[in-house]
Image (cartoon, rainbow, N blue to C red; front, side, top):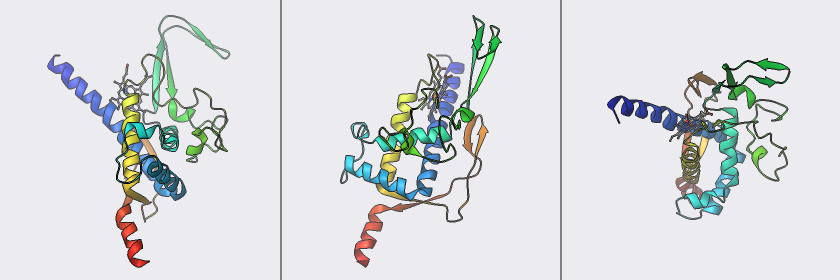
Length: 220
Ligand code: HEM
């Protein structure tokens, strides 16, 4: 590899491989802090699949459907890559009643698509259960309702790594800490700066579960 290729690859891996997953985890913690019931359900799922001092591994993740649903719902609300583009290089195409000549540049706004009410009822609300099989709110999902990793041969190369990274991190964090929201009660909105990022800092409290349990025992 030339030095230019090495520098280009490092920049790309930092942008594609670090900021994407870290922003997504920040949003999922933000919502779990605001939704203590969902956080408790996740905690129960994690300690059921991975009891005692055991550190969650990729095998344990297969027993954590809620964990996966939380990441999917987070990426629906905050698709960290908010837009995607494609050029129809070779053929003209018809979409609905419109004819697009060849070499048309299409831009897909993931952010707008994944808030479509006919596909996701109550689209502004964080509802991980909409992704769970057999869940009350489960509707027949449109396969392209939310495609945060893109689609086709140029879809995200790091998808599996990214998902595993986020599942492992979130399950480990939840196992050790109870997450509480910013006592100042500030709402954080997203902003597109190439990637979709929090417009203001996300402040959270992390309470050590072991210390909380010891405190509870001491006061009982
Ligand atoms: C939450 C995490 C992530 C999301 C939502 C995400 C999303 C995306 C999207 C939408 C694309 C463009 C796909 C398309 O044009 O159809 C993409 C491309 C790409 N992503 Fe990710 N990504 C994530 C994490 C990662 C990670 C962790 C890595 C590397 C370890 C990575 C590496 C790449 C690469 C190399 C491409 C370019 C693929 C190509 O052009 O053929 N991504 N990603």
